Figure 1 (tube, rainbow, N blue to C red):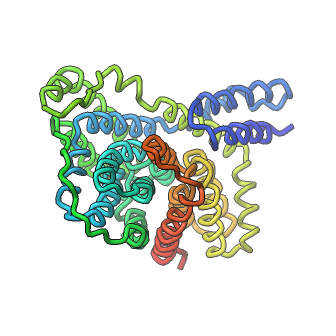
Figure 2 (cartoon, one colour):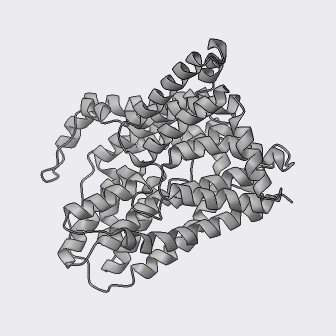
Figure 3 (cartoon, rainbow, N blue to C red):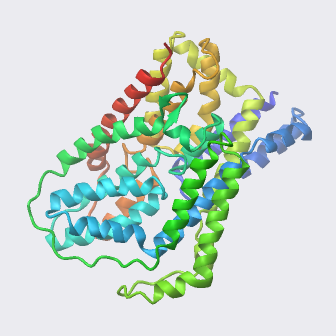
Length: 448
C-alpha cells in the first residue's frame, strides 16, 4: 500500500470534520496525523522517521509566529477600544443611516486588513446594532455587509488573514510583494478592484436612507499604545522586505515580539490605565484571559495542515492531482485559471479556506509544471486560488467564521437570517468581487 494514499484518506477524514466544525479543529488534524502514522506502520508502508522529520522541518514556523504576534496585538488593540472608537466617530459623522451603514461596511474592511475577521465583526456589530435599534430598522443587511466586507479585505495584505500568510510563505513573498512584485501591481490591488465593484453591490442593498443618525455614545480609547505597536510592526515588515525577502525568521520574530510587547504592556500598565477611562459598564479582560482566549485552535490547525500537506506533497499526491486538473483544462492556461478560481469559489462557500488554500498551493504548482509554465510565471494560478478561496466564503452563512458570528449576533437580537436571505446578498457581492479581481489578476499576471 502506498503511504501517500494512507495519508490522503486520513487527511480527507480530518478535512471533512474541519469543514463543518468550528472547535477542536487542531486536535482533529493532529489526530489524523497520528492515525496515518500508526496505520502506515501497521501496513508496512511507513516512510521512515527520517522522512517524517523532513516533513516536520517543512512546517513553516515563521508563519506561525507572524500569525500569533499579529493576533496578540489585535487582541490588545481591541481591548484598548481603538477600532470601536474609530467606528463610532465614522457613524457620528455620517449624517444619515444610509451613508453610516455603507461607511461601517467600509470600516470593517479596513479594520480586517490588520485584525482577524471575527474580531472585526465583534468590534463593529454592536455599534451597528445600536444605531439600527434607535432608528427601529432591520439590521440584517447591514450586519451581513459588515461580515462579508471584513472577509474580503483580509486577503489584501500579508497580515490580514492566515491564507495570505500561507500563500506568502509558499511563494517566498514578503510584505511589500502584496503591493508590488516583479514590477507589477500585486494581490492588494486585485482585492481593491474587487472591493470597488462589490461595494457598489452593497450600496444598492443599503439604498439611501435619509433618516438622521441619532446621538450615540462613542467608545473611549483607553490608550493608543497598542496602535503604535501595530504600526511599528507593519513598518518593520515593510523595511525587512528590502533585506530579507519572503517570510523569514526575522519577520516571525518581529511579529511575535510585537505581540509579547503588547500583552506585557497590558499586564503591567495598560489594563489599569484603560480602567481609569470612563466607558460605561465596559469590563476589561486580564492579560491571562487574553492568553487563554487566544486562538490556539487555529494555531494548532495551521501547524497540522502544514504537516499533512507537506506529507502529501513529499509522497507525490499533489503532483498527481495537479496533472489531473491540468488534463481537465486541456492544457490551456486560461481554462486552468478558471478551474482554479471557480472550484475555489465553490469549495470555500461551505468549507474552511485555511486547509483548502494550504492543500491547493502545491497543486497549482504541479498544474503549472504540467502546462509547461516556467517557474515564476505561475503566480496567476496561486493568486486566483487565493481570491477564489477567500471570497467564496461570502456566499453562504456557513462559509466563514465571521458570517456565523454575524448571524448569531442577529439571532440574539431577535432577527432570524435564512440561508436564502444571506445568499441573496452574499452571492452578488462575491461574484462582483471575484470576477473583477480575477480579471485583474489574469490581465496583469496571466502568461503572455
